[in-house]
Image 1: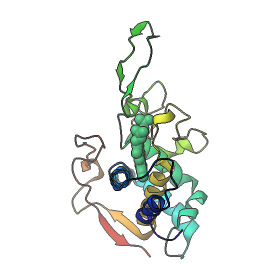
Image 2: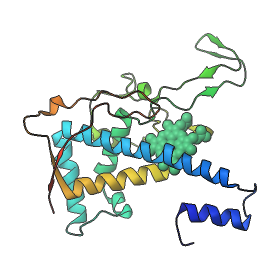
Image 3: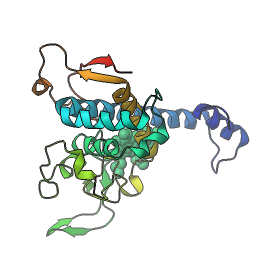
Length: 234
Ligand code: HEM
């Protein structure tokens, strides 16, 4: 079908081809979900990855080398190119491990009474899963506070909800339904930023001066804007 997601939703409403009758209110709600849950989180991923890269110049060089070698003089990175860039994809995993854009998952409620490590949990207890803390747990991760994409190169740990040590998109039936779009958007934006430009800190600033403080909110954003100088490479 031609057109974008708005055209598609209006078409579904017109055809009455969905199990429930879509109203304009439903369509507005769906679009709000996409905008609120979607674009903000992918943007945060890009900013955190760039923050980690500028603080780790060796990783920055290595990832840019891989992208530029793979793309050559084509001028743009396309979605399909990314699968030939194992170091780049490992770098994104590592950025999502250290800086999950949604550090506390959607709250759960326990359905029945249960026992966890000797503690009795009543039915109806609200449960918050801290995916940020899990991803930095020193009992699970070696040098958890360090940005080391190499840890994912010979590992089958992925962020799709099957490996509970890395759940930036949550897991189970409540897991993020936008994972494919979220990853693709972040990958496209980041790979092109890294392919097209060399990145430098503003004059007089050292990499240690770049902070990783966060703003309050459901989505974890960098508190102070990341300010970098882009130099055209192509
Ligand atoms: C890098 C990008 C993204 C990250 C890190 C992310 C992360 C998350 C997380 C952690 C959850 C909660 C999952 C759980 O509690 O198990 C979630 C839920 C959700 N996400 Fe994403 N997300 C991203 C992109 C997107 C995109 C692109 C969309 C839609 C276009 C989207 C739509 C949603 C929705 C609708 C929910 C709520 C699901 C529910 O409660 O049933 N997300 N996301």
